[in-house]
Length: 212
Image (cartoon, rainbow, N blue to C red; front, side):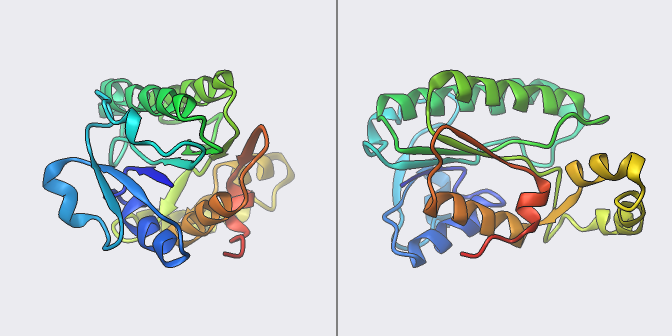
């Protein structure tokens, strides 16, 4: 397996889970972050945006790409292109060259009334994956609840109401809240069950907390 974003919010938690399940894991990292990778993970020194790590992606492996700007906000619109989009282009090229078995990517729920620049870049990332011909699983959460990301719990009553009104139900479900545990469970499921073609896992699918 090959993982980018292995020291980030989700990647730092997913890596140990995959190792505990018996997967051999290589993770892209910069030199200052090597110590943050879990014991048993093979570090690949490199940069997600500029590339240069392509030859280290194991042939026929599963590639999980979790690189992205932390704490997305409208003020970071330029970074979505210079980091998120640029890193995805490099990752897809590396995955194609290695003829990976399965590519896993965390996108975002869309359409959406907010964070338009972020949504637009993630949609472009999805298009690049589709054109590549890779077998891929794309997760589409809206907001992930977890340590340091708890303020949207205050919106839970509003979501509860919207999900029960026919005219707002579809939107509320598509843009619903998911937990970090649900995301990790779904990522693990995706790794264990490679897709044929492109598989989309939206908020309702992530909420089902697929058994790992």
